[in-house]
Image (cartoon, helix red, strand yellow):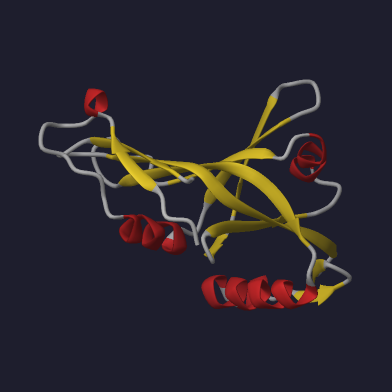
Length: 168
């Protein structure tokens, strides 16, 4: 597991603000139920959509159907940003995870992730594992892992803060 280096940006932080411990930030990532993923279409336009994700072993994991826009975008450009937080100005903590989405195809690893999805989200998110994919209801889903290159944290309300964690 890579340990990030935290940098508080004083330009956007209240006096006396300090960066949260990485363990606190990981706990927020693990507890967050909804993320917004940003990918890039082949013509360069952005694509943003909400999805559930699981934080496990130092990475965010999400799934998508092979024919969905985000999967098609990732085939051309695997760089993503996943965001989570609240839409309240002066309360809560927002996070942005930037990295490269890598497809997970190992059936053993996929079974571990399927169990994590169901434990976090309940039986609606029960997946079978077949041929390097999740299988659920209407068909297969590709699973991707995003080990962060950079994570940004935005503390809202006093003290306001902006922290960047860099992974080396």
